[in-house]
Length: 304
Image 1 (cartoon, rainbow, N blue to C red):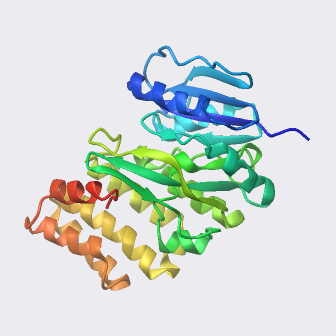
Image 2: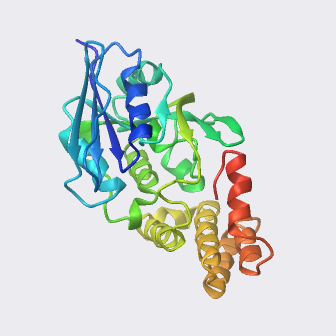
């Protein structure tokens, strides 16, 4: 039996130089099997992409024909995929050379798993921080308790038949596609625990040009959507408190003091030491700005 092929979906929007870096990092993989890159242009005209220089590598381009945004673009790529496995890579990030070589065997060794994950290296203006995944495998309960941000979308490797079957496509109804990867991981972990390549295999660049930077209304709406969609959060007070604290922070960042206080109260009732709720109250009281909080966390390779 041959080495399985991998389709890598790279959604992009008006970041041609970053996109080319992302695609080049896929073409440079030392993986022995076939790899195709599907670059999905979301609401923008296609531009030139790097050409493969090695056998067993291919690059295709297409337009997002589904819902505008990251979720729809990922799904356009999934539906166009020709290989057994599908991976995701954002256009401003990149892979380390051995990512597929070390990750594909995880799904080969765990036939019940719908997806596998990989740790990440976060690059900020202050430097690089490695964020290995502390658990292996990652269960549904683990993900309800803790987002495990080390388990980034760009580290996901999925079975194409699962994405077209029991797991399902990326949820295009999530406001702004915010947290679509978290939702996918929660659904995948319900099928079977997620095996992971603990050490960093993905390089995630955190900068001020994120698609989600400061879009607080959308973030609050998306997180409330996830709480409603995944009732299991109610059985995990720390997990519910974490998400409620994030909603409180998003409301506070918009100047919505009453809404921020309400969500902070929910968070603290579930988790009395929830730091996001306390930060939200500080922002609502104008003791600190949300920009300063984000700058401090970003410098440490973390987010709210």
